[in-house]
Length: 76
Image (cartoon, rainbow, N blue to C red; front, side, top):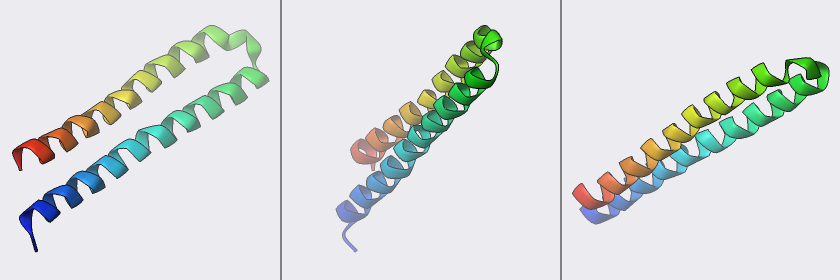
């Protein structure tokens, strides 16, 4: 198999799974936060603080995937 083809396939797989996971996680975070706010509106500050913190950590995973794809394409 052609090494360039393998490089691009690896970048596609890492990029696909690396970006799909954080996107699904952010959707689930938003969904559960909205359900929690609907059930207990008084706890808005605690829910929003935790939601923002988890969303930031989830986005960091997506950035790691982006850096991995760039490294695979440029270095491999």
